[in-house]
Amino acid sequence: MSKSPQEIFQKYVYAGSLTRNAAAVAECFTPDGVFEAPLVPVGAVFPRRMEGREEIRAALAAYYERQPPGGRMPNLEKTGYVLHTTSDPDVFIAEIDTVFDGDDGGPDETVSLVRIFRVRDGKIARLRDYFAPEQVG
Image (cartoon, rainbow, N blue to C red; front, side, top):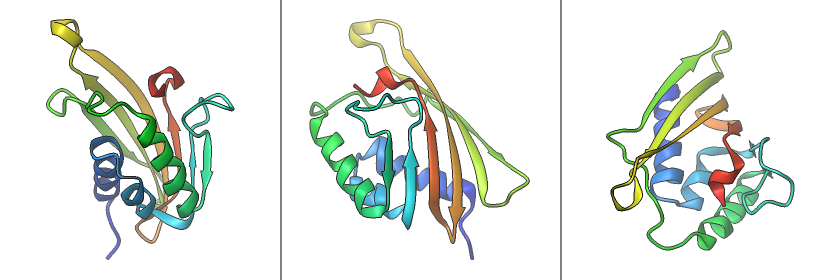
């Protein structure tokens, strides 16, 4: 039985945004999977394009290691998302509003993004992640 968009999305978010586990993120992808962040400038700290499970694992591990310990985590009670299925059963879109609590009682910060997933056999074959590049340091 194949995985639903909801299951694929939740597993991916848990592996990446919540636990920052590069190996678990890579396992969400097919062996030849592609991760693209088209809005990230060439040469930025966050990789613009990663091809293959091993490159995804290595590049994200290096990125996560550069993040400060105990970095900002999303407030899951305030964060929301909507999944959209398409006429292609292997493609779905996630609209996400990630909310981070304000520092020292300041206002919350909402980071909005869109991810387009193309799946094959229950794994991500291609992910296009559209977010503001200044959000990844």
